[in-house]
Structure formats: structure tokens, C-alpha cells
Length: 257
Image 1 (cartoon, rainbow, N blue to C red):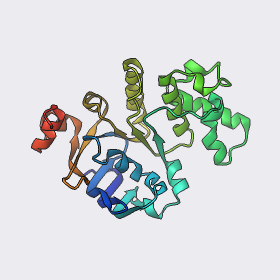
Image 2 (image 1 turned 180 degrees about the vertical axis):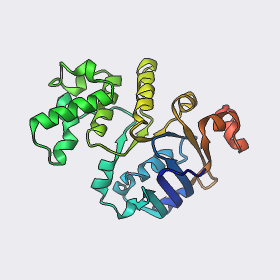
Image 3 (image 1 turned 180 degrees about the horizontal axis):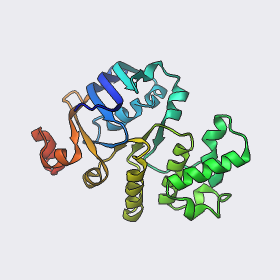
Image 4 (image 1 turned 120 degrees about the horizontal axis):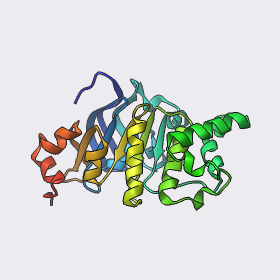
């Protein structure tokens, strides 16, 4: 699927862990200010593909890549990885707040970028917590340990921590899989608000969540040699009601073996 306003793109992108090919020849465009869901069975390379965009795979020994990966037409492989990760934030499957106060969790990124003024940090922390729709719940407890928050609050705090460095893109690796249904709904509502300012990619095993929360869906599968590949990519309503590939229909209807 082609777009006029492309934020991220891969061309003939493949990734290897040593001799094992984890991804094969992925061609995809990710549009700006939209939510793209990545779906597919376990082991098909969804999370590996997600980590491509902020080069988190670089941290794994033996990884090598072929093809192109760009953000705003700039190769991510020619960018400084630290700068890239400020631009492309990441929210993980399980909430991972630092063992610090709520304030210090959100201020961590700006401080690492050189912000030292307390008033400026306080402004960033408030703006980020508001952006993650958790400010009203924690504003009177900013010095409290982040570990004392509920799971849903911790995950929204982690989103606020990502927002604090003003990224362009937010990657979410099953951000609600460890949460209860109420907290999950809050995360989904938050993602809808965030797309006004950010480009979002979310990996999910939850078909209902992909259908509810995303604008576009990319379906990945695994070849016989276990290499992940892109089957199809389109508007979420089209993928879920009129997929182009039979294997996509079998997967989203639960008939996939």
C-alpha cells in the first residue's frame, strides 16, 4: 500500500540472527499521524520488525540486515542510534518504570538531553503526564515511587516518559497484554489521542484490539524456513472485512492452524 505522506518505510528489508533469517524482503510504508497495527502468529518477526525502526536489534549479537529502512526519507542506519531513539520512542509489553519517583521517571530523558532547570523539567513532566492522560491521577504524588502505581498507570507513565523527549514516532510492543480490560481500554483511547501528534506502530496478538485501535494493519506470516514476511497491508477495515489473501482471512477469523 502506497501513501502520499510517508513517515517510515522499508524496502527489501531482511534481518538475520547469525545464519537464521528472521525477516525476508519486507516492503512497507507507514503513514504519518496514523496508527498501524502489526499482527501475525507468534514467531513471525513482529517485534523484531518493530525494533527495526529504532535499531534496538543492534543490541543483539550477530544481527545483520539487508535493504533500506528510512524515517522521513533518511536512512536509520546512517543515524546516530541514541539520537534515533529520541526520535523513535518505545513502549514495551510490560510496564518498566525505573525504581525512581514518578517525576524522575518522566524527567529522565530530558535530563539525559541536558535539561537541568527545575522549572523547565516540571513543565515537561506535567505536559508529558497530561499527554499520557495520567496527570490528574498522579499530580499530587509526583515524589511517590513509580513502582507503587497500578499496572495501567505504570504503562501510561512509560508512555509519558517516551513523550518527554518529544519523539516523532512511538513504537508499542503489545502495550496492553499485561493489563486488565479497563486499563486496556484506557491505553487504546490514549493511542487514539496521540496519533494527532505522533506516528504510532503497535504490535498486538489481540485481533479485536487491532480492529478497534488501528487505522492500518500489516499481517505478517512465517515461511517454511521460519523467516517472517509481510503478507498484506491495508486499511484496517479492509483487512478485517475484505482481505486480499486467503491466509489473512483464515488468521483473523481464527481458522488458521
